[in-house]
Image (tube, rainbow, N blue to C red; front, side, top):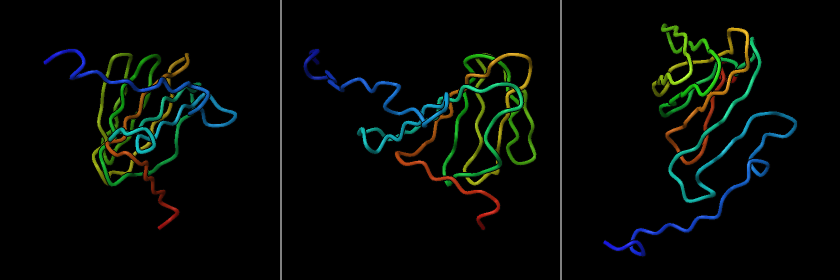
Length: 122
């Protein structure tokens, strides 16, 4: 196979194009870019993080910087830089930054469109 057979020519997606307004969070939904996955790149301070929610697909977390406490169903984990964990489909989960520094965590959604449900919704 030659280089031209496998060449991809996507345009870069600037961070500001996918930034959640007035936040340090990036939200990428794959569907609009020909990708089968979506992600959040969350940057937050100690005590911050998303509220309890779930998805009809797996969500994979990878800590880039800082420390996080992940709760998925009955499991509680402390994650450090380089750690990866998975919240299975339909499991209620949340995380929060712990420790003293900033948390940077990549939250990969196994779906081209993000679907989130919160307990108060149903």
